[in-house]
Image 1 (tube, rainbow, N blue to C red):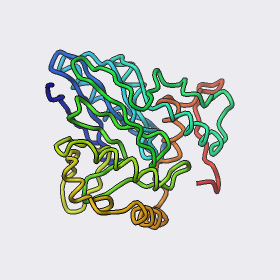
Image 2 (image 1 turned 30 degrees about the horizontal axis):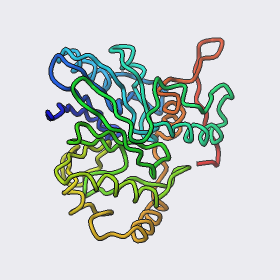
Image 3 (image 1 turned 120 degrees about the vertical axis):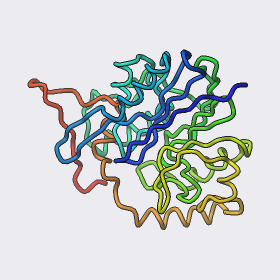
Length: 287
């Protein structure tokens, strides 16, 4: 089975990695976790970062089949609709996005027309489902904990795109204090990932380096040996205690208010009013 081709793109503002995965030049591709630029102070969006992915797909003469989200991100807005408009492809996420939509529809007091049924996405994956990207085979793993809806994408059983479930070994793991999060479930999800063969590449969605350059790829073996939160020998009880204590000290993500409202809509902005204006809500004393 051939090694998947992977091209990573870093959004410096949110320290998010987006990916184009493909079988070969001129072949088939998928985009994972694309980022929409957002200026919080002005409320303006831009597609500068996402355009880099579009340009690469075109330069490689690729046909885009999928735009994959690992979860409803709380730290950046998704550029999935822009990517789809430019290149086609289906926007997809795990089926438990319905749970996240229900939770945040209540938190933000969103319109009743926003049904928490996942219909905003083109496709919802279930745990264990397999699909193809050209000559690549992708397996979906439900890895909840950071949110109820997190999934990882295992490509050709050689590389896994882990979203926020795991970070680089010196950074650790994702927080679990968002509504619906669970440190217990995150630990169990991490164990699923670390049960993959040691040589499996793990591509992370974020990197927060201290004293080094940003990196996006590690391996199962490196995580088992060196992850500061979940290396071999760390029990679930010890991890849960550490994770909950650490989460209690973390600030709310800078872009959580716009990000969640947009991302549970598959990256679409809220519907405009009669004058064509779009608005986001700020819940007071809720987050």
